[in-house]
Image (cartoon, rainbow, N blue to C red; front, side):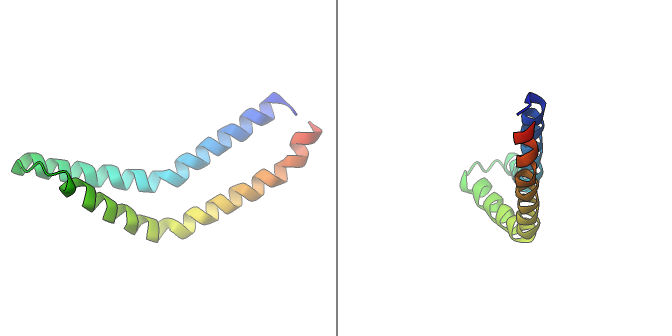
Length: 90
C-alpha cells in the first residue's frame, strides 16, 4: 500500500465529510446569526430562543437534503470499496 494512496483516501473522506455536513452547519449558522441579531436588538437573552429555531431549521434541512446526503455517502462507500484492490496491489 502506497502512502500517497492512503493520503488520497483520507483527503477524499474529509472532503466528503465537509460536503455532507455543510448544509446542516450553514443552516444552523444562518439561523443562529439571525436569532442573535434579533436577541441583541430586543435585548431578550433567553437560551431557548436560539436553540429551538436552530433545531427546527436543521430538521427541515435534514428532511429536504437527507436523500442527497445518503446518496453521496453510498456513492463514496462504493468508490472506497472499489479502491481496495488498487490499494492492496500498490
